[in-house]
Image 1 (cartoon, rainbow, N blue to C red):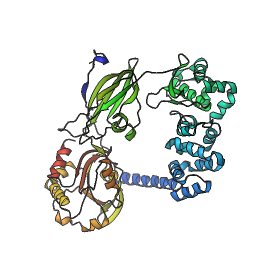
Image 2 (cartoon, helix red, strand yellow):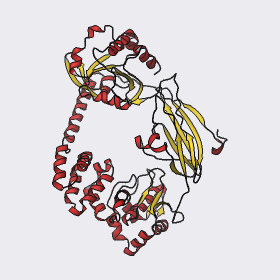
Image 3 (cartoon, rainbow, N blue to C red):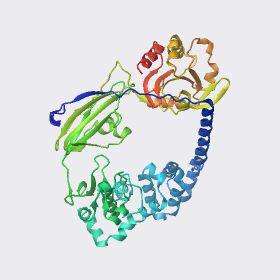
Image 4 (cartoon, rainbow, N blue to C red):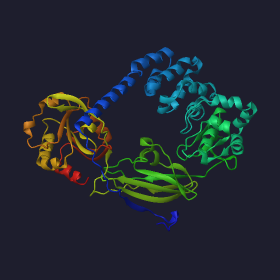
Length: 519
């Protein structure tokens, strides 16, 4: 493989197997456990006290009506701001009426983290010193690439007012007419010293202006910040990492070596994928990635995570990419920790559509991760005659576990429990916890333990009173229509589901043990 050129490389399948885990057992005395539990309870009380200071939905609605902004949008913004709500409310309260619509647009375009972190004076600086939008049809575009103070991973700071004060008005007009003039200025006056920023922490734009020195990434952020301050749409492209400005209805790549803008030839990529029972819509980062070969090195394309970067949304239809050689990596993670991966090089050519098969390898003889389950999910644990709040994690401890949602007095559930009882000795030998949840208090009261003798000893019963655990299983396992109880899954406290069963299943106990034996 190492002797081949990327263009000659048709594909390679690799099984990536991690080393065996060496777990060091830590013995904890009952006294130490009690001290730790008290400390955890105190930490929870501190957190709860802090969270109680956040705006409630009713308070947010009242504030939105008082300042005269769209209550639906404002409420979501204020709830997302959490402990920073005083800064956000201060900003909205002090914005002039004629600017309030733009203020809301600004709060909508910054990230949720920025809502939680950004001081009001930074928002005021951005709003006050942004050139107005000339075209009402372009307001969303203007908000994202001119109004928006967020460029990359830098700390948000006041910079627009500072740059508009420092730059000569005639030079600002020149930049607005020809943004490449600012690129040329950066080339001539900003010295690149990457060795001085070994931790790669971005320097704020005003800091770059003052020192005239920066690492490459901080220089790119600075370039975009000044262009936006001058009213020129600009960005660091989220997918390719290129610094770009918008001119003549197209994005222009910044070339700092020449001090000008360039246009990269474009091709198209379309990924073909056949949905399977286990993977219906592969997700970027989770199931596959794309990297471009640049100067002999692979440069990862940072498409969005989650649904926005999934095959069905981003790659089912042709997507525009720079021409060049790319590497498609796909992988199926197994329950053992190993990954069934596939690597494929391909080339995109100008004006052409390259079609590539996205292959998710499977191994029906092994256990693989098929979904997710939040191990911090809460339920009401039944301990003797008591009902106490609990989570899956603090009930099972670290490792694998079984969770079941029962349909009391329903034949599929009765069959499932008898099948589990048939292999109770194996479950007891395994030693991990099985959590069996009743959908309601009423269902729990109808359940008769005496009808199912011989169940494993490591069962913890509980109530999913608000249905949150069941809803999470339905959503994460992508169940459609009315779900049929019982629901059973095997997962671990890294939130990986390796087995799932719904409704009537023959030999459920043996199926569960077959999976467990492979873990």
